[in-house]
Image 1 (cartoon, rainbow, N blue to C red):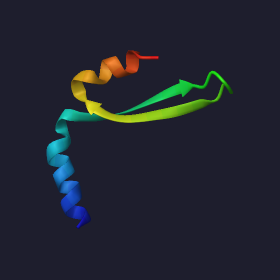
Image 2: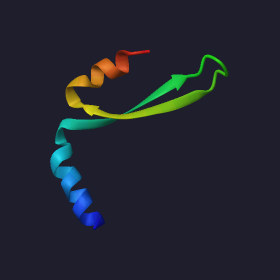
Image 3: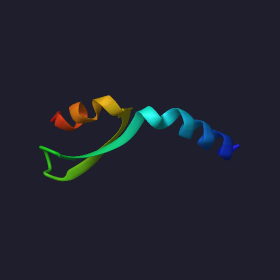
Image 4: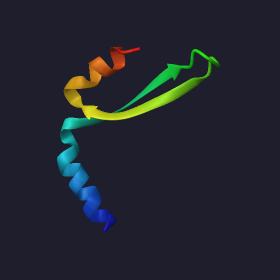
Amino acid sequence: MAKKVVASLQSAGKDFAKVIKMVKSPKTGAYTFKENIIPNNAVKEFLAKK
């Protein structure tokens, strides 16, 4: 079953990218990571946001 799921994600996922952004918490000063799967044409907009 897992092979079918992986195969379907590979064929449909070519227009998307997994983006990981490091964000500093204003409260504690610690860094956290935000992960999103977004369309390729929206990557620059996601990384430009604060």
